[in-house]
Amino acid sequence: MYRGKTGKDIKNWKSFSRDVRGTQECLLGHLDEFPDSVLVTGCQRSGGTMLAGLITKSEGMVNYQLGDDGELDAALLLSGQVSHEPIGRYCFQTTYLNERFSEYLEHPAHYIIWLLRNPHSVVYSMVYNWKRFALNELFLQCGYAEMNYRDRVRFQRFGILGIPPLRRAAYSYNGKVSQLFKLREGYAKDRLIVLDYDNLIRAKERLLPILYERIHLAYDSGYAASISERSLNKKNSLRDREKELIDAVCMPTYNAALILVNLV
Image (cartoon, rainbow, N blue to C red; front, side):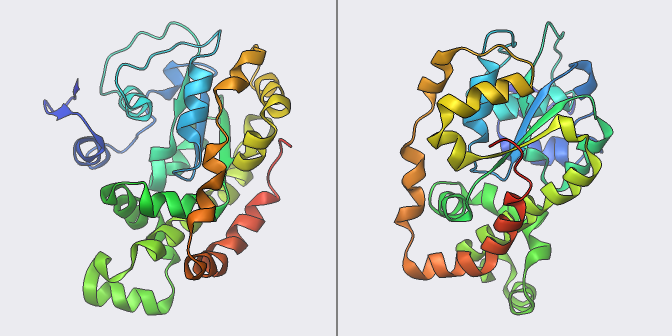
């Protein structure tokens, strides 16, 4: 639990949304106090927590995490909600930026690792393994503009509950992944690393050393052992009608983003 500038306890993402996102203009305002940081991002449920945790615990990085949620710790540090004296190099998971993603462009002296993951696994995880608050927040911040005309009408009539969770998740995926296209145009090419999650899991012994070399961090062969392959099977749990909807809504965006993968 953290004491924020508002004098209120910021103990979860609901508190962060209300007391920080809702009141501060900048969420990365203190990022440049942590030189040459590594920022792990992408669409939610795409492996960012796993990769950020691995890099944070690597030799040569500072393990700053104080609570059970490393991304919330990062959000509080970078928004200036907690005091911290930088003592080395840091890795932050910054998936939470959502509609504020343009802030990346104001801080070009850091590495961004964008994890791209197939939409079947991501949407499944959003619908069946995620809290509704998180899905609804992402939908309102990134997915709302992606809706088709029919769903816009339903939203106007019935609100967010008029859009089924599967469609909320699919639209959210498109909105979040589409941010990569704009980021690719505005961020230094040698500082933006786009990595396909499924490839990383399947070829971790080969790709992890390359990734660590790109971010100028020493690699240990034992790092790959901490990455599990079990998450690759999530997409197999989808029903046929769910797969069809995701194919229709998300696959064009995913295929366009695959072209930007630059670590293979």
